[in-house]
Length: 191
Image (cartoon, rainbow, N blue to C red; front, top):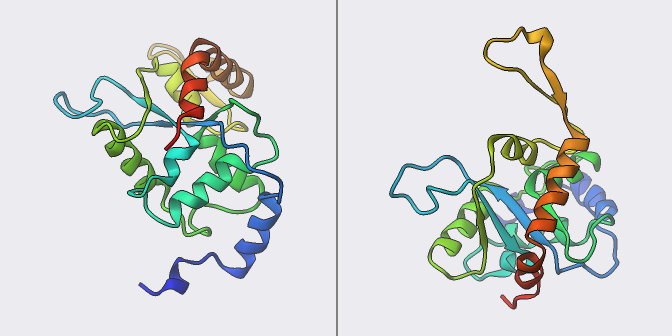
């Protein structure tokens, strides 16, 4: 693969510049990403979410330049705040609002998160593992502007209850509140 195949297009670079203001990065944020269901015996089989500090994206084993690009989206967005907890789906939504996607940035977020999970499993980065209940998992997976509809197995589709932005915000606030001390330690930990 040639280097130019890994560079964002001119169009993507312009939009990326708009998304990424020149202000100082807020590096004491944490990233929450979801793990797939794993077989018993697999690392983290009892967990379905992993939280890492932004600095983990600079680990030497994290693919380059993908980790750096994810770090920029995570830390340089104008709505980030110190000590914040950011879902991976928030990063995707941030790009979408700017008219971009991971492919246009030539950033393989799946490879990055797989590498971070491997680094966490082998103890090479600090992390927090979680087992989110089904509803929390769903709300972490959907974007901030997405509405999902929940229904029980025995109810009609028309009886489905909408959930979305407000419930998602509440889940994020609950996680941030419950894990405040751990998140602060994780966010300030040197790589």
